[in-house]
Image (cartoon, rainbow, N blue to C red; front, side):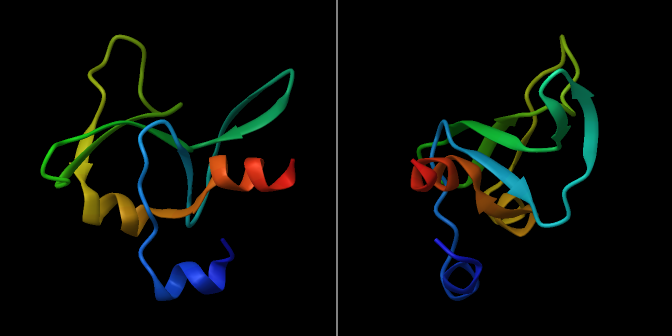
Length: 88
């Protein structure tokens, strides 16, 4: 999907997909390069109201944060999993 289509429709949220922020921030680096504050969806409740996610900002030993679907959509810009699949 391109940014133009995402602004007119809601970004679909899928368990196991990784999303990038509208304003990504570098969270650190490793041998592969810089990594950003991307979030991977671990769980969406049965009612589709809350999302539980993991990302580099979640410290080891902490509970995975939960936010509303609306809040997650406001934060997210693109689905990195879909973008990676389109490049293949």
